[in-house]
Amino acid sequence: MVQVGSAALHVGVTGRGPAVVVLSGGPGCVQYLERDGLAPRGHRAWYPEPRGVGRSAGGPHTMAQAIADLEAIRVEVGVATWTVLGHSWGGDLAVRYAVDHPEAVAAVVSVAGRGPQCDRTWLAAYEAGRASQPVVDIAWVPGVHAALGESFTEWIHRPDLWRGLATCAVPMHFIAAGDDIRPSWPLAQLAALVPRGRFSTVPGVPHDFWSTHPEVWTATVTDACTGQ
Image (tube, rainbow, N blue to C red; front, side, top):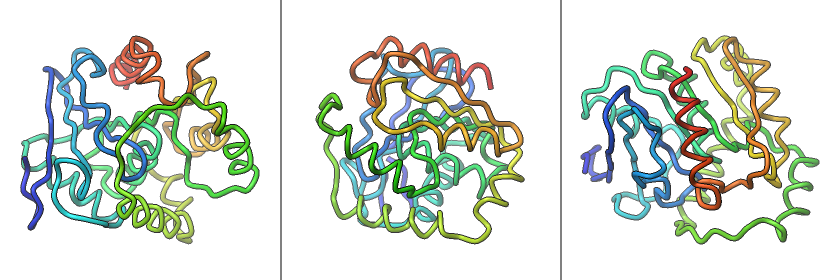
């Protein structure tokens, strides 16, 4: 546990090597990626459980607070810089973390993220595909989900959003899941926008391929974290 203000936050850790902090999605989901078999090989991986979720104390909060928690954890565990590996919404949080604290983030690996957008055609495609998406049972906290969702909307409406992204020198690799119901064009756009961006697709896997294709997940994140 890491104490951040009045909240004790659960932080798991596994492996040895360069530091990687792994962010789960939702927002407001438990830390479903905290499994040794899913960790990027050859790295020391840290797994914070979000404030107010699962084993972590606290409650509903903003993206700014989530990033402040990550920074407090980084300092507490004695890491100078780390790669930020995020899945789904965790990938979007990773991008904002890099923009807000480029001095702390060595690289971003965003897997199956949404991107900073609320496009109607994207949402329509997502809704149309929901019934065909493999069901993966993940515990989540509705209040945390709602608060972070509102904060995400505020972030993507900021007038300086795109300038901050376009001037962020942190390397960012955006990885799409080939069979994800979520359109990948926002990730391709981000990769083209940020100065050191890269976009790739893992064919034949759904959004939660950490669950359905764990070997593919581990190989993908190992390659991505090693290649940064």
